[in-house]
Image (cartoon, rainbow over all chains, first blue to last red):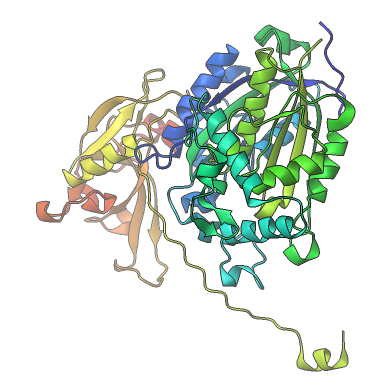
Length: 361
Length: 168
């Protein structure tokens, strides 16, 4: 077995096991611990491990969704940090927790990491909550909602001749179709582009189908460094490249119709160094898929979001980590050799993380 | 900095009111504890692995990371593991100072929670003091820990600190 060499770091790290909850509009019964616990239990079972095998734990979530302080500490009740464990948390999507875990596993003696992300979008008003990630002096006081901001971006793309509303509808149509074979998806159906174009505008030029669903959900991954990964799974999904970059916080300082941070991250992750069989892109709004695809230079031979992507299920703080899961599952089951996983955070694709996952040849 | 800005001085204050409303999900396990308060009783859960009893339970054992499903009804009697005497006045204070806030370990429980101690002079409170819950009148009971009015001494001898050292 020839492990593909990583572009960054000195130790190869692989995704060896994944688990995710079904995304739902509103999980009313379970609190965050109860939402997370079955997912963590499942990922340990899938890896044939117990909590005692884990050297490092890292999670992604945000207190703003729950409206309570230190909710990530409460969530540790689902994970079992006894005897005391090395643990960390990022106020970011779980994909950034995966990045921190990947960095941590570069250290000899740390071989296994548990990564998870969770979020319940149903507890508050997401359009107001997400406004609080904007500049607190000049922007947040006006409470611009995320759909309106995404619409500004979509309009910029249309005005620059990069896309049409029909393109957006075509993406939504394909996402919903692909989601029919994804048991964890929330929005799955057969609707043609022409049918979807009859939808009302949410905020022009974005029609309803171009928006992600509001989702509650959780996801978890086990990472293993080195050959020990082959003890867990025949075909680990090796992270051969990974990078994340950030664009200017102020919208006026960047061209919304492009994503230079994605381009840079993709370059550093080595996306173009080989053919990309599938790409799971964290494009919560349909037009962002076109934008990300261009930014990474993905061509027509790459299958985009075979899971349905965020248009089918979009639990905040787990949605990016789920892209890793969907990409890794296709490496592990042998249906793809080389895959791209992308995650975004912040308003209108401000921050972007890109990774290349490969199976051993 | 331009001369006129310097003359005006920097902007030092900006008010941007923020209000967010949330629905709280108590969850399955905590809902049971909350409903217990409304019935005037403490309901916890036992870990199937280490057998520890958590009250209120969040549905998992934080040590073993397994779901707790076995319900345990706990008695009104408890031990004060540690306490403090509050002498500081603050806005919205509803009790006359000085008063005692204590960590309460219900008999049969393995985790403490905060409770108010009444019916004893602050200088007489000691670690290990035996107390019992005094609930609000039945018609005022609700799904809240506020259903427990306070804890008062039972008159039993204090417990040795070594017998509950694990819970300090």
